Image (cartoon, rainbow, N blue to C red; front, side, top):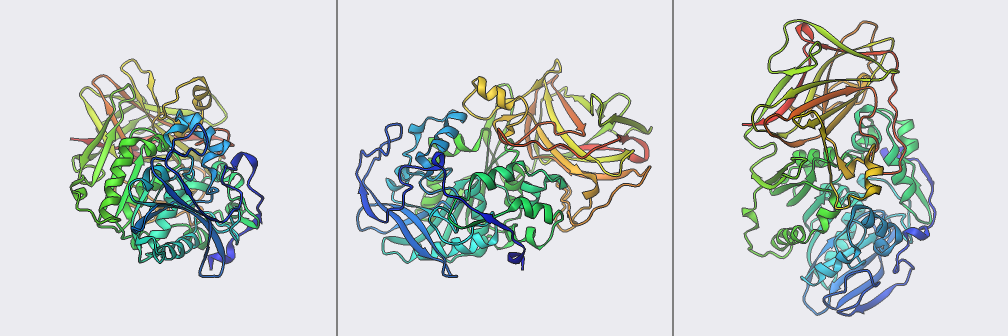
Length: 578
């Protein structure tokens, strides 16, 4: 069993910067009156709220965890919304969370401070007839047990909490889940366990495969954010999973990593999924889960910003309430008329469009179109070049990249899944780490990019010039270690290649390998005269996902050769709207 493959290290108490006003263990029930502020910088409560603090819940294996419950006063039973993550349930008022809000440009007054980091705010939801449940999950803060990182065990634990909640005398028996990032990922695992009283989920951007999204994206051991997640959370009294040691010990897909992929075929609950094109941590996983989950009642909204400003935006919260009112409160409010897909297109110069309705993603009007690489002219063409040619770079030289450009003569929108089919050769090496990027250029050849957060100050410029990619969108990227190129036939589709990552196939001298590489989903508009640049490099073109984490350096040597035309035509496949 994969549980036996887990590796653990000692955890440690919640540090001061992660400690909130209500962190100290203090079981009991109290009422927070309308007008109450947990601290001056936060929103006041619009109604009286019953606060059940540090309530014990026993899981099926006897482990006791603690939850904070915020619910309306009165005798009417209400549905509950669970925010499941390893972040301390009272961290909303901590210095770390306030620092995150400051970094992205959110004022702390948009929330009450009672919310879990990245979770729903009790001030809003209790005023509208919902309870909010914030657990300290297994192994976190004062809860018993050893903590795990994104694992099917979490789904079983949350199953137990949901069924316990449904049995409380204040609860209507309808339970939902909501939240971004970790709080989104936990919803895939929980829904796959099919708790009887889970009525709806709202995953708002999150990975859906720990191996492919977190520790080995593209088959490369890039564990920078995994290190930040492991070392910067899961604080408690016992042990926490050592995902870094596991990544070293299990470099290929095996039972350990399979246990960290939700069983999407068992996710049948109504779901309102929120995604973006620009979150280099979450985008691939959110779209993957959306494609593979079995729910017949599922909705997708693709926004044009960053998850935290989007999650707490007043109009988006109201939109989410309509979804929960339908499935948790049973209101006949016309939610089913909401388009199954609402997507955005990015202009990168102030002309974004959002809320574009469609019945699917990619939209039915999107046509997979091949743009062939031509090495001599470094262009992208509509037909495969008849003559063979090579474009190459030495990985130790500058530039250590080659690029190809096309200019659009008419208004063109790309919406869907890009992929690259490349014929590659490593001279003087047996492997290649390849990094790909689709850039938008203006008519004069200047790269266009856009911040995804309201804050545009000098600090944001500094951290995003190279790195912190979730805060600044520079284009759709992809990557692959060529020895990990074997495709998973069961998961691969015409527009989204999926690699098995269960074998290593190094290159022989002179071998030309055909590789397929997925790039992040795209929604990009090109006006007449604007250009698309496709970059292939041996180095990480965008840098880190988050500020302040260690950047992965590709394992490369020798010379990389991209073959074009003739028997080894390479192409970039793009979803072009008719």
